[in-house]
Image (cartoon, rainbow, N blue to C red; front, side, top):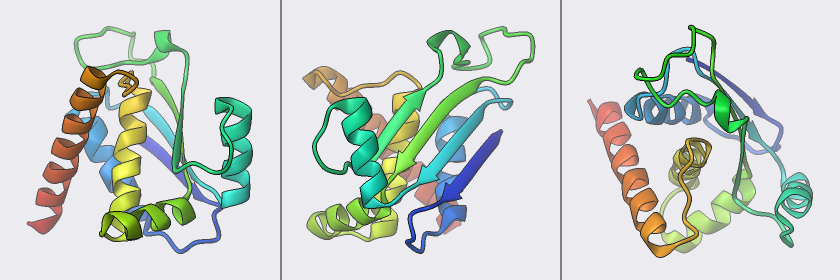
Length: 155
């Protein structure tokens, strides 16, 4: 699985852990091992610009997910695609927003970035939380993936 990460945020981030949790989530979801993902960490100003341009939002947000064409997403081994890599898309994270949210939630900024990474992966795989039932499903899956990732790291 090819995961590229670029930290352009100016914040110190354990990018190895972000890569690890992204890879774990993709593996657990049965995504083809040829899949490609990009993770970009940005500062507040750039995230504010992206949020406004793509989501119509005001101010920065914590995570944005930009999936590639739905037809190119390989959700697992049951889907035949001729062995071509699946371009999943891009996840954009803002460590500064994540740190503020972490303080409010009572956990570390690193934990918040891991959560947001899994959240972004799930969005790329077609999950959403616009409706209450969708939210329950997505957030339960997100929690399960984070718990299983943490369990593998504790070994």
